[in-house]
Length: 77
Image 1 (cartoon, one colour):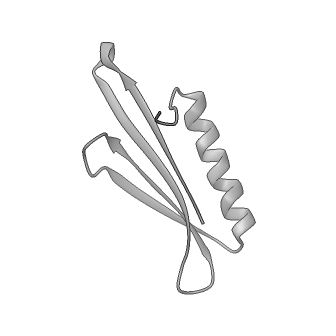
Image 2 (image 1 turned 135 degrees about the vertical axis):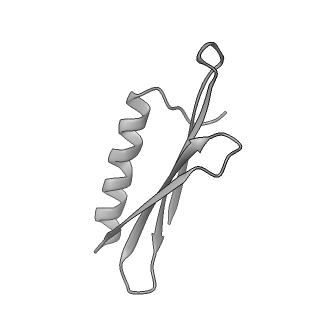
């Protein structure tokens, strides 16, 4: 499926964060959107949501990525 990684680094604020969104199949025929976030180098926190179809899951993942990009997160270069 798909995995997106975003970073937000601001040395002035001593901020170095990551946000990862991954779309995965589960064992029961549904699709999971797993989010992981925290400080770069740390384990972070995780949350998962289940969707009936891949298109619904990818639409939800896209909305999450868009919201984070509006808050200043960018794809690492």
